[in-house]
Image (tube, rainbow, N blue to C red; front, side):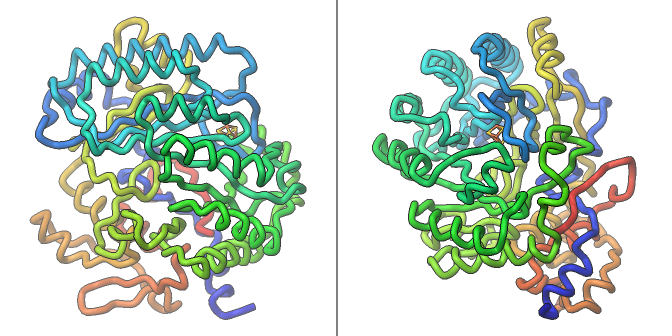
Length: 447
Ligand code: SF4
């Protein structure tokens, strides 16, 4: 075992948030509700672009590794009812936002958002376009499951202006696919890429996983090589989080089939090696992009952003989120919709924005959020400079163990994470988290 792997393993079991927000979601509370959010919405500045997120929590089948807020359905009825709810939610928002808000980014996530029919996309996109003005250069992104995608669906997406697709791949190893109940051949995935490109959706991301049941370093390597041949612009490479106490269907995956921490690291390294050799640039802790891609350009310039969808070119300080469980933000705080579709639908049908909880930023939250975002994006931070920009004192932090282990170095005011230890960036970020340890939040392991 190399010294690097040994050091990573030594810190691997520490549980920290993924820092796609700060304060993190477990610190949202019911004190933030519809009334406060309405005030925040009314104060939005129409000179600044906003983003939209729409959550569609339905899939045709359950993947056993799934950690998303979704439910499997063979019937179309719940989807039709859900679309009705979305239209009601858009109408409620339209009465509360200033007219002429400009949208620079829209993302549909799930679940399987392409489960909507062409007519349902007409309804939802038509309603969104009637309330918000989409900029000519707006990025319209959507998550795709190749197993339920075809040429007709590609045409529907193109018709509505979608120009980026995020394709779920995970692993091409047949044994792994059987163990996660997701059978998806290379040919099926290639057809999905072809359908997208044929209609002009050429900006394509891929999602890969390591740490899946029966996955090996060799199969992670082969999957990465196969994915390179599909030529996506960006790839996200995540570790499978086995949390059957929170996601009971994960009990269908036998514990003994899961690779241990060392094997997970070696799989992650193998995927990274293939992608770097193929010319991709490493972004933050778990993304890769072609060097010409805007994500890579922003990363080189230290301008990368991070939000609930991971690393992004989107720097909007406002994300209006629609659908059950979705999380939005304004410059004043985060809000989260009711997680259960039933509660969300009840709220919108009774004329109430479906906010279940949230958090209002304090000036200190905003400063710490900036510090954490720079660590997660750049693997370095100059805390004094950020504190000065916020006219605040720099927080005291304890990172001697990370310094002693050689994971973090001090360099004339900057804290710099050794790129070999990028999976541990969350540990440095956690040093700036004033809420860590409060409440009963459960986080995943760092590696
Ligand atoms: S397609 Fe995605 S959201 Fe749906 S069950 Fe599979 S992993 Fe979960």
